Length: 100
Image (cartoon, rainbow, N blue to C red; front, side, top):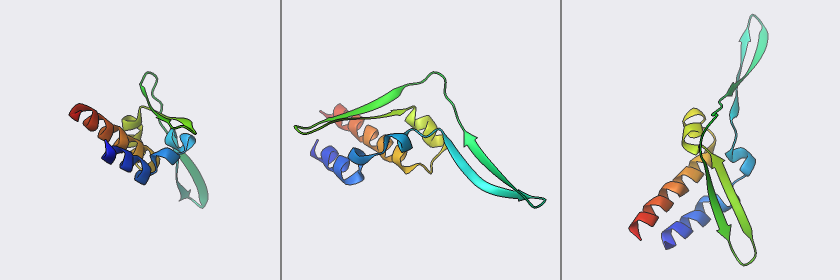
């Protein structure tokens, strides 16, 4: 369990930005076609999925960090590193829980 707490502190899980963690669209690099600059955005939407939440309780604070369908959105947008940190914490938590 100590390793999990250390990972949570060292990886920045406690400071993840909720908005960045739940991005569902990413701006793609601009393209130039016939001298015209085209701006594109990749958007993904899941209609029926699962949200995962991490609740952190301390004597000074209560924080809930959540992500909707983190694995699926990470597959679509791997450049959003916050989601990768969130997923890694969930994986470590599940592994630690099974070992108790």
